[in-house]
Image 1 (tube, one colour):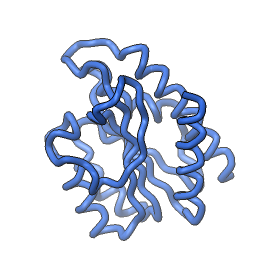
Image 2 (spheres, rainbow, N blue to C red):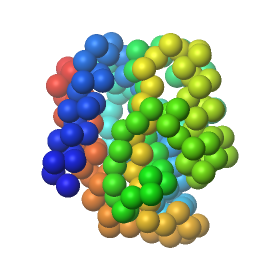
Image 3 (cartoon, one colour):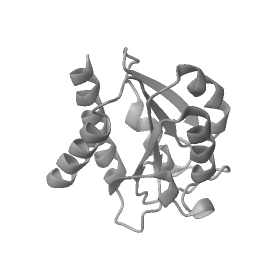
Length: 164
């Protein structure tokens, strides 16, 4: 796990090297177990000069106007995702690699949201997906996802601290 986390941190550092403004868009529902992963990953983080957090919850499309107004050079979407991996697995990828409706647990396919934002923003857009164990209504967040989110949050905090 430590090596994977180092790879994720390195990949983010490489992608964000030229970033002037980074928007972090957290997606998920705290009512559906591991679907809360995106929300938990940014919980407690504060906006800085270079990073701004947007809580999209189950309707991230409602924030497109605010995100466009911020005009980020980079947009990171954080959400649980069916990666066909073991629970808690974290992957970074481009939204075009998502499989439409089956990728996310939300109404608007992530791929469609990202395409709209890319046309509007001309930003570098990436997704951080976290494999859920269960997204059943009223389930608790699994230990695997809690553990993964804790490490992802540490990486994001380090990137924010290094940018100041």
